[in-house]
Picture 1 (cartoon, rainbow, N blue to C red):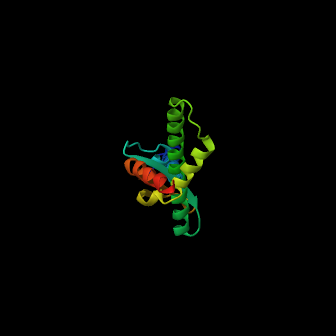
Picture 2 (picture 1 turned 180 degrees about the horizontal axis):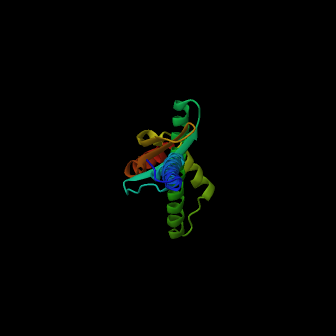
Picture 3 (picture 1 turned 45 degrees about the horizontal axis):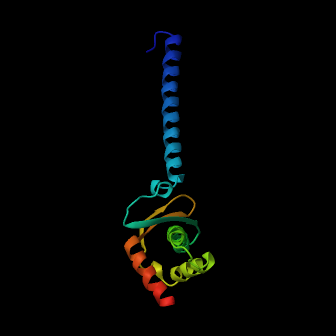
Length: 161
């Protein structure tokens, strides 16, 4: 079958080398797939933009999947709330600087913002994406309509005055 022992060893080495290359390829493919599963979704690290909505992302880890989703949604809504507060405070400061002799304090404005925010403004928020990662970790993307937010804040602030 083989002409010499050297030819036999050459073929054996070639077969073992092919087997080794296949094993290395298979292991590297599995490792890259595992790394992809451990990475957060692209929308988690780079939130989408839509001028009609404010987006918030959240994540949580819990053995109870329902509780994990609830925690992640709460974190996403807290992020939206922080964005809204930042926008309102920025607008108040710009408006305030345009009025000479305006006597309300920053703390009173901030308290009225908090009051408006805590009175059910998130009824129109929508969970857009839920994606599971490794080890019971869940990622969520929530959006909240900008126009409804402005209307809700006006009605809530007039109701609290």
